[in-house]
Image 1 (cartoon, helix red, strand yellow):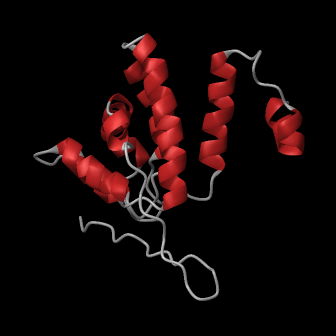
Image 2 (cartoon, rainbow, N blue to C red):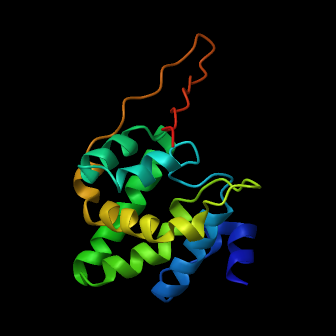
Image 3 (cartoon, rainbow, N blue to C red):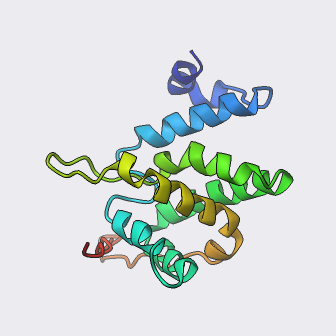
Length: 164
């Protein structure tokens, strides 16, 4: 009922008196319904491979820097909020990572490909835990604005995914 009310008139719905778990469920639902995850399909391998690199934090920082502006700003707002929430109860970082990880980072569904969200779930949760724990440094700077064409439209260069 709450999701239908938000879909019908989001500005009219007051979430301030709602339980945190209810608001989180609605937020996760919204993230899953996005046509592409916040951390993008194109960068999925970059994020997953960052967890296996010699310097995971530097690799994550590089992957975060490749996010399109809108994704960067949305991820920045969300992960800084989650980081703030976790600072009040440090043991909740893992819980937040498990709750939000698969909503933020998931592979594109492809037939015949074995690797999927279930196989990568431990890595996804670990990466999101690092993103939450280090949100202040990973999202400290805003990316440069996208170049603009003569017609005023932004030019977006899709990041190149890492080869597996």
